[in-house]
Image 1 (cartoon, each protein chain N blue to C red):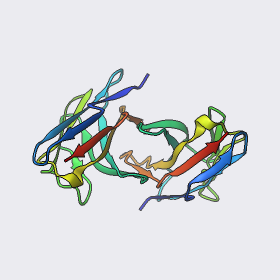
Image 2: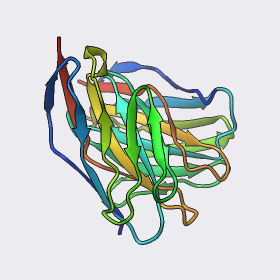
Image 3: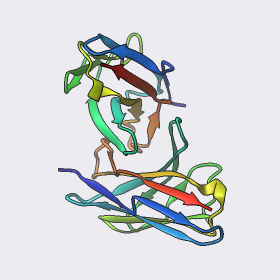
Length: 113
Length: 115
């Protein structure tokens, strides 16, 4: 079956530091990959996505590249802000037609001023 | 675009009562809606998948008679927690997708507290 593994948090950084949150996946087909962000007390918001190998998703300074050879989709940002503090979820969607998503456990990011 | 709303945003109820949570897609037709449950500091647990006009598909371990899901139209799905107990207290989140799209649009969540 499909699975998503994320690095455990919390990840604690100072403002303007470089961020990497690792995500690897296992899938039987060719999934689409997503990063969602959840701010405190809110639902999830789509941050970025990539649908095929070597695609790079980007949004709000965040980037992630679909690496089929390493089955990874690591999230990066060059300079984090306090407002980036949230929980980040890596997810995949089976393109086989069901679109039922598989989520990672989430990684909490805390950015200090 | 692609906004999903949930109502209520939070609810407190007595043990034994039933609670209905609404999930609406405001500016698109949602052929499929998902219901999740999230425990503190944990990931989302998919409870069920519902397609408009058909019965919901429940994940293993989720009681369908306990968590009634109705997807009567392309813009509305409801989750009713029947005879709620304190262990049902949780954050419930819905999401919706459009036809042949894999991107999910999430509602803001409903926090349920059963006393």
